[in-house]
Image 1 (tube, helix red, strand yellow):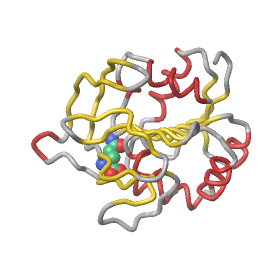
Image 2 (cartoon, protein in one colour):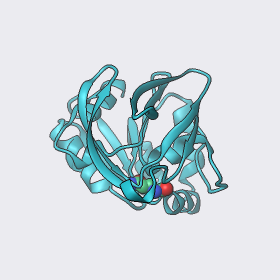
Image 3 (cartoon, rainbow, N blue to C red):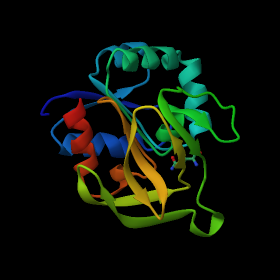
Image 4 (cartoon, protein in one colour):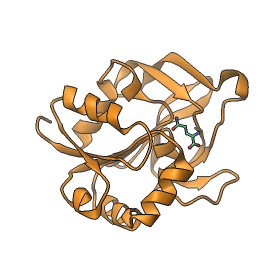
Length: 189
Ligand code: GLN
């Protein structure tokens, strides 16, 4: 995994934290803002942030169709939180621009106001125990096709994988000191 060029979509949101985590794993992070940036990478992370904003900016910069094309050709992609929303084929009660790549239906801001943000231990298939930070997080309401559930928390699906190149987490591994989910993604890339 050392030296692998991994892009982080840097329109808005928590992209710097992913940059640091990837560097700590020995990969070469590249902030992606243009089509040229995207061409240079072997994998892409869509960070947390505001999915409506990231979705609109991706469209304005013409990156949405290019990302879809690359992923269909096999480029690994991982969405965290807002990134998970943007990867979903269906978003409950929303017509916002998104990539529509994964066979999942997500619900935005799915944890009520009382528990808008929280941190907890999680059990993830293929990884074991890890720490999850949830910030106005979505969860997955439904999966179909070949999508595999990698983790649930309180009966809600919070991590999924489709094929060997698409990964989505409702939580933010980049906001913890653990690198295991980043390493898992790098192994896919
Ligand atoms: N609530 C945000 C959204 O719907 C996601 C929050 C996050 O990425 N931390 O886009």
